[in-house]
Length: 181
Length: 318
Image (cartoon, rainbow over all chains, first blue to last red):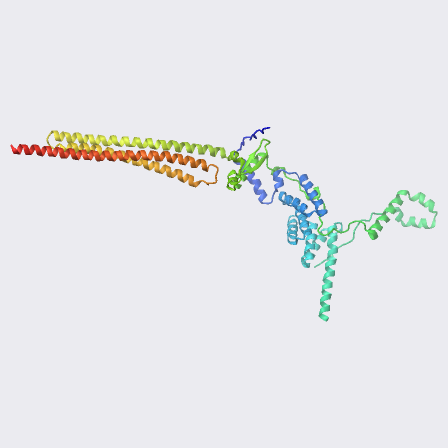
């Protein structure tokens, strides 16, 4: 059976300067971080939510590569969402990429300065690399944001602060012992 | 570094029934009739609440069978209300704006958008690039330039082409007219000179050779005008061929219309070189005519001179 040639609809372009100006204004808004690609494309937040949920499930069950792809796409679509950056940081952290993880957590915190999850996870990355001062600063910020102790991440920060204290005390004691010897 | 503000308590206990915690009731239960006290003050719901409260206390302080701390690198599940801000409908592109933007961007990136029957836009790699990469692009025939203003540009290009064709034809006509006018002017001047010289010869003020010389003088400038005109035509053909070759040089050899343009240029240059050869033959003919005229004038003058000398000698011999 012969295929019929595809008919092309005529492209009627309205060269109205006002319309072009409007398009340019929207593009400038995108460049100035005032809007996102998802917003420009007219995507609803529910669609992004469904994608983020799928990414979270993958991340939770250790399918990091798939989760990474999902969150990469989500960051591309909506780079202003701190949750996507935080989740991406988590993917990097679990894939043992500390630099990328810190970058994503920092991006998330630059968007949302009250993101306890990013503070705690970034602090933990610092702690793993023995940057105690930065780790303690991040944990402190996370704990101060949750004084009631309801947040699981703030509680983790509390436990990690105790771990920092113990580690520092242990190092101090070892130093004293070597000095005595 | 200050970490004193950390509060690690977890408030997960539920408040127990106030009546069971009441000291008066506890005292009555110790000393009075327990059945009477229970019947009057406490019901089954109070017992349930009390047991539930004790259960929570046990769970919190001893069992702790719920998550207290987050895991390493964990993130919470996304929440529609807290993690996703509502999108502004004003910022989204309309379908027309999207298409316009898409076509502009495609034009910048060297891709050509194709709108199919469903109104969906898909990118089609430019046929030129595909051909340059050695891929047989099936879409060659479809690769027409699209985009805002392309139709207007096409009309403009056609108008320019039509004007150039018209101008090239007109230029030749103008050269012919110019030559004709110049020849008429020269002929009028020459006629005046010839008439004056003939009158002088008739009145005996000048020798008859002057008539021949005047006739030659009248004919040679006309040939000169013709030679100039032919020279101009040759120059025009040369310029036209240069223009065509320069236009061809400006084109990308990988471009789609290059071969077509090349063939057209070759055809034009063939016809122009034929025209140029014809003009050169005309020029040679004109030069020959000038030579012939001058030779005729010279010969005529000599003949006249010889005839006059012979006449003078014959008269002298008598």
